[in-house]
Image (cartoon, rainbow, N blue to C red):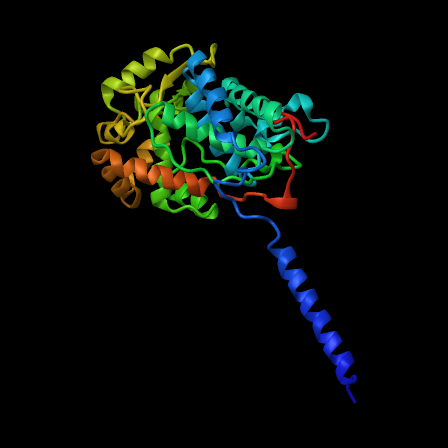
Length: 334
């Protein structure tokens, strides 16, 4: 015999309330939104823009470095500012920044985000996450170099942890095949088209000689990688001759228009002017070459796809609501 009607109705009501509570809890983390800080920090975009613009004027290499920093953050456990944690402020495990592949991340990029965060804390203390500051900084600095400007959804939280052991296997290497890169990007929910669009970030910035030295010295018994333009290869050999004693020696990723965010990176590829082995791999592999060809021929198509890919990248593995925190200092776990 079941419970009396009134008790049965009460039990049903309680069950519905419990179900609703569970649903709300499961979806409690707010979605990212361009208007996330509309009330709590309405000038967030202007504050970040002003801070990073000043840094870019002082050091023009800041933009490319910050774009790379954003990518390295998002590909390891999501866009959560975990890459910003300094080894000097971490008392536990070595943070992501200490991983071998992250040692070449430029100090000016970290400083740009730190300046933006300091300005945000001065106006809106404890409100805007480091992860959002980095996402906005990357967007603004791309635009500063002539690239596309696009809406950035906000509301990311910062990670409570950062561990260098999480990095290996989550970031593309400069000698990766296109197939391997496609698989890696697929693990992050990104398509081959988005991968090739994001590779266009190599239209700015530079790479240290050690990252492509195997292509220009003793490549499989030859003088250089045959995919390289011979004249370009010889110039690289001369420029990088002392890289073992001076590891800071570097070359622009795009030797034609190194300071402009444009489609020239893609135009360089069929002429053997892709600096990294991974650049050459994109051109060699038909499923990725088709997008490189499209972008080389159409800047608008590149800008549109790059903007869309950056928005998708910025949503990889994000933490929202109680999944993370708002760190007051980006270089520390508080």
